[in-house]
Length: 319
Image 1 (cartoon, rainbow, N blue to C red):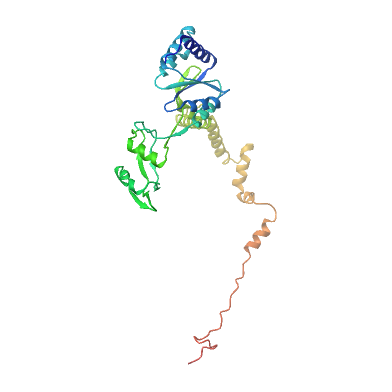
Image 2 (image 1 turned 45 degrees about the vertical axis):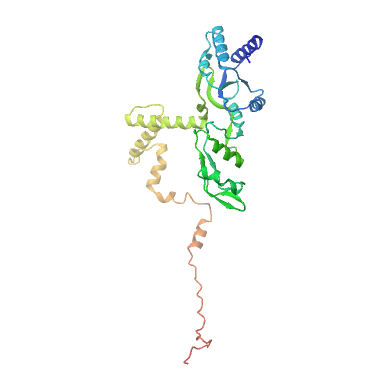
C-alpha cells in the first residue's frame, strides 16, 4: 500500500534531518532480517545511532533533493548505494562501537527452500531421533546410516550444503527433521560513509596496531634504501650516527695518544678483559659458593651382598 502524501513528506523531512545532523553512516544489507530483530537493534543503538529504512526510490529522491538544497554536500554519493534491500545507520559516534552492536545482533534461522546458503552446512554424526521407516529419506541424500537403539544414526559427518548453493527441498526437510537451524542472519555492513568519504566496511578491520606495524615496516624500508644509496634521511639518521661512531671508535682504539670519553670503556676492556669478567656476578660470597661447588663429591660405594648358591647356601661350596 503506497504511503500518503503526509507520510511521504514526514519521511523526507526525517531523512533530510538525519543527513544534516550526522556526518557518518553505515549502508547495511537487511536480507532475511525480521522487523523484531530490527527493533531490537534500534533499542541497542538508542542514543548512539539512528536506523532508517525505506523504499530505494524514496531514499534516492530524498538524497537528490537534499543535494539540490545543499550544493556543496558530498552526500550525493549515497544515492548509488540505494540498490537492493538496504538501509542506513546514521551516527556521530565511534564507528567501531556501532559496528560491534550491529554485528552482535544476529538470530539463528532455518534453511528455506530456494534461498542461498551464506555458509557451509555440516550435519554431525550421531542419533537422529528418526524411526527406521525413514531410512529411504537418508538414502536419497546419500547419507550413510545405521539402526541403533530403535532409531536411525548417521555414521559420518555430512557436508550437506556448500556456501552459495541453493537449498533444495530435501535438504531443508532433513534439517527441519533434525531440528537444526544452520544459518544466522543480521545486518551485514556494505559501505561506510564518513565525512564525505565512502569506503568498504572492511576498512574498519584496520586497527591502530595494524597501522603502527605498517608504518614501522615502511620506515625500516626507507632507512635501508637510504643507507644503501648513501642518501641521509630522517629515517636513517640514527643508523648513520651509529655507523659513524663505530668508525671513529675503531680508529681510536688503535691510537695510544688519543681518546675521548665514550671510548675509554672500550679501550679499558681491550687492555684488560679480565677486569670485566666478574661484572655479571650475583653479589658477594660468590667465591665461596664456587669453591663449594668445585669440591669433589665422594661417591658412596655399596658393598656387594655375600655370594649364595641357588639353594640359599652361604659359601657357595661344592655340591
